[in-house]
Image 1 (cartoon, rainbow, N blue to C red):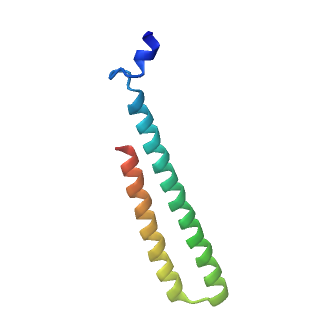
Image 2 (image 1 turned 180 degrees about the vertical axis):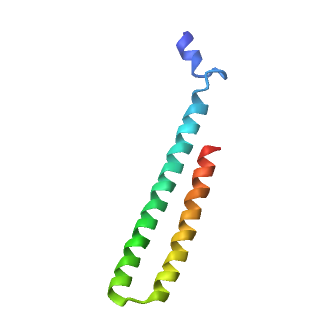
Image 3 (image 1 turned 90 degrees about the vertical axis):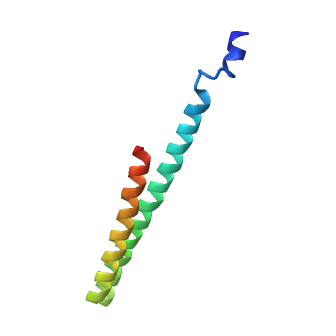
Amino acid sequence: MMSAERGFDQYSGSSHYRLHGLQVLVYQVVVVVVVVVVVVVVVVVVVVVVVVEVVEVVVVVVVVVVIVEVEVVVVVVVVED
């Protein structure tokens, strides 16, 4: 009988841990997606530079990579809070 009541105990913290685990999972998925985007951007930059050899394209892509890295930093800060 005690174990059945424990599921509803406000001090058991089971729902809190479940919610925290879900939040961590969501943040991990976001970080993985952002990392994949960064890798794709870097690969595209390398291909464009090798094929086209245009300096302006490198500057634009570096700006895009910096913006994506800032998003990664923001996500990591949110996860630490």
